[in-house]
Image (cartoon, rainbow, N blue to C red; front, side, top):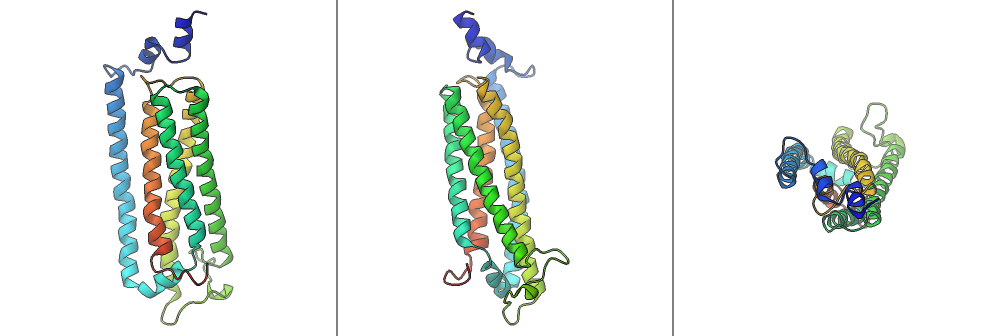
Length: 242
């Protein structure tokens, strides 16, 4: 096989770049810009969605400050800090994966960086599952029949109702659960992108799927950067509980 033919097969020649071009675009740059615009529109919609949850949390926190402050102390801030470091590191590996495709680094480098991002994502989800199990053991799952903090010897301050405690954990599970769902979806999207990288589909001329996924992954990480202090640190008593 000639060098030219090998370049086409492995996704590095002009013909290969042309094959990646959808029929309704004039060139790859136009296709890349359209894809990026679509991703930014999607992110804007997600910002509004999570913004509604953040607003609800702040409203209820102002309404029940004592309950939310006490309930937040049942969250393990050390584990939350670890998970924050994991996600920040995953953002770094994803940024490097984008760089690797933009600069035409080897398939091994591209796939390795994406695999590191995926592994860090799974570590985050595993730690989150451990946290959820802790809440189950303490009777803090906000579902009828499962929410029983008193029966599990969880101290509730005077003047605070179990309903107020339950509201905190409703919001905690809603926000962190949706965030985790976005991470699971992201992992599912990253797998075929890794396969494309292994097949040599990306080059300095064509790498928009990696760029767009990078935007999504950074967005998910930024959401956690807001969730972490809001849920784990605001009003927490670091010398007590966890």
